[in-house]
Image 1: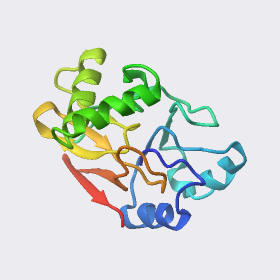
Image 2 (image 1 turned 120 degrees about the horizontal axis):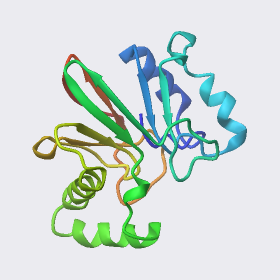
Image 3 (image 1 turned 60 degrees about the vertical axis):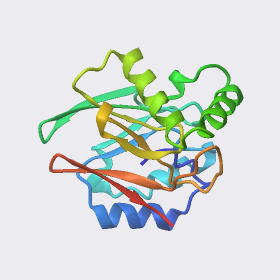
Image 4 (image 1 turned 135 degrees about the vertical axis):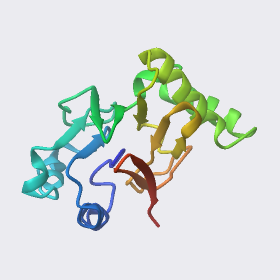
Length: 178
């Protein structure tokens, strides 16, 4: 799950996702906690069996420090890298959003594709699959092994693709929320 921005998300959505998917690992790719006072409530939504296998990658809008900046894992034969993505803005947040809107006129996917490609280059990735939050876009760019992880929040931005990513048995599935 990415860009939860709790409490600006539906706690029932979060519980439903975790219950439905029954993950053995939970990746929280940044911008998870929008208000410090909500942190214990949010982490209370995560079942005890999953707490030791929850990775909280810090985003630029987290009001609580995450434990990680980047997570590298290998599972089901796939080498994966998880980041929030704010590190790859082209300048201040507003400037980057304007650039995304401008290039989005040409193609809705172009800004997300370029964002992922730039992140891959900056991280020096080759065969690893990149999972990146921050944009609130939900896309799997197989040609460059990169996934934009969407958002679970109800906040609006350039992209507001409500959904999450499931990695299971070597396959990557995007799940959209209504």
